[in-house]
Image (cartoon, rainbow, N blue to C red; front, side, top):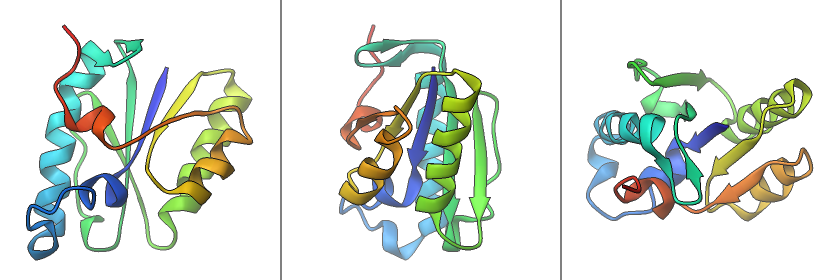
Length: 126
């Protein structure tokens, strides 16, 4: 399964001062996703192919083992929709993590499943 994470939406879901260092907050999220790549998320056991979509000030976030980073200079939502469409074309099940209702509508049109930010904010299942 391909896990596509809307970095801006997930980072922005917790008022922990992320706005003072968007890139640092995104890098912390990226690092937390490594465990999900191996262990999975609730209802979706690992291993997962994890894709973190970044935009704006977070664009310089580098990939790490287990987490691919896709950056866009324009709309993160458009890139996430494109990635969900590619997954569908490749026959790969896809779970998009975002709380954005319009983005959820767009990706479910490609058959993607959706989950909220808490899905990746908590520890992976044992």
